[in-house]
Structures are given as C-alpha cells and as structure tokens.
Length: 319
Length: 308
Image (cartoon, rainbow over all chains, first blue to last red; front, side, top):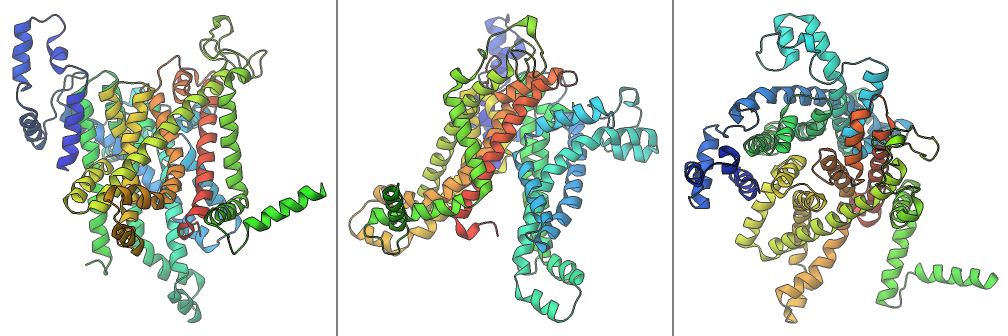
C-alpha cells in the first residue's frame, strides 16, 4: 500500500505540468513564483516531499482540485457512491446470471447451452465496452426509447431526494419517492447490464471450470450411488464445494467493474469516479487524478484482502 | 502429380515418425504435431484467418483503400454506407470511413506488436532474475510487481498517459507498464521450478555463469507459457489501446485510430450511426480473433491448462 502511494506520488512528480505555474498563473513575477514554490514544499528533497504527501494522504487530504475548486477528498466522497451503485448492480446481474449459467454449462457439458455460454463469454471478452455502450444507447434509447438516456436521472428529477448514501436508488427508496426510483432504474439499467455482461462472462467461465473440477471427483459418484437426485448432488454437494472459490472470483470481478466503469461512465455521463478521473485528466487537474487513482487503488487492494479473509474464513482447510 | 503426392506422403511420415533421427527432426515433428491439433480446431483457424487478413490489409493499405484517409470533403460529410464513392459512409469531415478503418489496422498492429514485445520481455527479465537470484533481489522485484498488480490497469494507464502526455508511443508505454507484471509472475514461477533441476546443475558444473544459464537455459523454457499468455492478452491490449484512443489519450485526432474514430463518431451516434459503429466492429473482430487464437494456442502449447 505504501508502494501504491509511492507510484502515484512519483507519477505526479514526473508530470510535465508545472504545479506552481498552474496556481500562480503565467504572468506572476519571479518572487511570487518562488514563494509559491516554497509553500508547496518543492524546494525540499524528493524523499521529504514524499513524507509530506504521505502525511496528507493519511489525513485524507489529497489537495484542492484545480477544476472544481473543492478539496479532492470531498469530490471523491461525492462521486464514489455513483460508481459503487453502478458496479454493485452490475455484479449482482453478473452473479445471478453468470453462476447458474456456469453451473448448467458444466453439468450439460458439450451441449448447445455449453456452447452458448462459451460464445457469450468469448464475445464479452472481446467487446470494447464503450462501443457496446454507444450501440446500446443508440438502439434502446435513441430508436426504441425503452431506457433512460445518459446521466443518473432525468433533469427535472435531479436534486429532489435528500442525499443519504449518495446512491440514488437507495436514497429515493428511503425517501419513499417511487417516481424517482423508477426513473433512476431506467437510467441505470443499461450501463449496469453492460457491466453485468462483462462480469457474467468472467464469472460463468470460472464457475464452469470449478464445477468441472469438482464433478470429476469421486464423492460425486458416491453421492449418485447413494441414490441422491441429480439436483441434490449438484446444488448441495458440488456447489457447496465451489462456493469459497466463487466468492474470490466475485470479489475480483467487483474490483474489475470499479475499473471497467471508467469507460462506461464516460459514455453514459455517469458522475462517478471514473469520469471524475478522466475529466480531471483532460483538464490537467493532477491533484484530482492522483487522488482518484489512489482511492481506486486502495479499494482494489482492500477488496483483494477482503476476499483473502473470506477465503480463510469459509475454507476450513486454510488455517 | 503422382510423384509429388508420394513425396508429400513421405514428408508427412517423416514428420510424424516416432524415432526422430536428429534434434532438428524431433523439433520439426513436435511443431508439426502441434500444428495438426491446432488445425483441427475450426475456431482457432478462424481467428488465425482473421489475423492474417488483418496483416495483409495493413500491408496493402495504400492499394486497398479507395480514398486518402485524411482527405476531407465537407460537401460529402456524413454520407450513409452504400452511397456512391463511400462504401461504409463518410464521417463528420467527409473522410471515407472504409479507408480510415483500413489505415487504422496499421496503427492497431503497431500498438499491439510493440506492447507484445516490450511487456513480456520486461516481465521475462524481471521474473527470471528474481527467480534465479532469490534472496533480497527476489523480494524487492516481486514487491514492485505486486504494487503494479495492485492497480486497476486502465486507471494506472490513464495516470501514466497523464504524466507522459497523450500520443501513440506514450499509450504503448503506458499499456506496457501496466501489462508486464503477470509475465514477471509467470516467468518467476517457471524459473523456480527449473532452477533446481538436474540439467541446470549439470550446466553449472560445466562452468556456465548465471548470465548464460538464464539466457540460454531458462529463457527458452519460459517462452511457451509466455507466448500463450501474450496471445490471450492481445485482446486486452487492443481494447485498452482503443479505450485510451476513445478517451482522447492515445492516438491524436487526424490519425485514423479505431478508438479515436469511435470517439469522433460519438457526437453523431443518434443520427449517423455508422461513424462509430464501423470502427467498433473492427476492434471487436480483431480482439475476438486474438481470443480465438489464444484459446487454440493454449490447448496446443499448454496441455495441462487446456480447456477441459
């Protein structure tokens, strides 16, 4: 985690953008420039600067965003729930379709449904997500009008529900405002299904290979010989054994979606952390970019650790 | 006719023999068997076919494309596909989309080739050194690898491009910087299993130094697993490059990079669908081809991990 911070710090320092110049402006005199240079601590050795940076980050201070004028940490707090909402719904879709699909594909190995799952996963791996998003918008919003357009809500619904969690679906449900809830659903359903499709591709493939591994074990034969029904053999015996591995996969794909949402958020004008980083980047707002990158990296690491812990917790063999 | 047929039979038999007469013979026979099982899978051959087609198109781009990819004709902007002169339509500046897609294949190949060379070589180097040296070198190198692995790839690439500045070369560098850690992991794992094998001890007793052992005896054995991984990664590289291009951080505008083309077409998506659709289809086709090829290669080169 320290290394993670070091990398972002380093990237921030090798940037060709001069942070001093962007604060004082082009026409500042040399004295003002020097003063700003000192106040930013840029005259100190690199390693000292790094410790300053560490100290700030530990206190949750990523500096001020040059674009929005607010502290970066506040900005991130505001945009992060939007991404989480999207990634969570996407993962749910991926799990509820991907896991059964993987199980069935493994049990009915070699049949059309197995082939179908294989092709669906292959297409998912190969599809540029931003393009699929555009096509989805074109067809479902532009031509058919079935779903809401870009953004989280229609414009006249915005800023009505009080912000509690920052996730519109949760907030509007808490406020009991079902009109907004419905509207939010029409907006989120397309980007979430897209992300869901990508996690589905991954989850169903992994589920299938875990299942195949277990199905060839001898206890399956024993269970069948005992006369258990096929349903019981598969869901009670085999599936319980892959649960632990599956949890890891799902945690990883959740982390992957947080990342995959960068492009999706741009397409759907979704005000999440992905579009925050990208827009800041395009306007050379380095504090915001580095802060966002650190937060995403931290979430990534935490999810990894979390899945490791779950693994240890659920698997009696890993002591 | 008869003669050539029989000599072909002879070659086939020679290649499939169980008792190779020389080292080269054995190697060729192994290649041939691999090729046979490779060929047996129609999906893999489809992937290979698409990629060969891509290479040919890229090589012959100036002769194949009906227009200059940079030629603007504002009188003929946003022509739909199938209209006169523009088979796949024209974009917002009246440039021929077909020609741009054809020229874009060169950029895609360029990016993919560079990344596919830089990342595995860097990973191979780091991994084998870490695995062979052991001790603190191993710890330090693997920690660095872990740090890079900890970041989500696209976000890290974004940050790198931000630091380096937009452009194709920097996109290549950024993608390579995010792509090498898995190769280092693989190479290290392979090295650790090989390091204590008898033939390495024998080579060392013959007086070979660590440099010679790593480059001549360990690297060749890591290659096959790396190649498989590279082919499977290619699709991801293409998607990452296109994503960077789409965000305006890869190839810069007049360049007919596919991701950048989609980004230009995004403005017109609701009324002029073809501008963004055509380059997207190109990206999809190529990355699908790489995935198909990678799957097939894995079955041939790495039977223990083959799709069961």
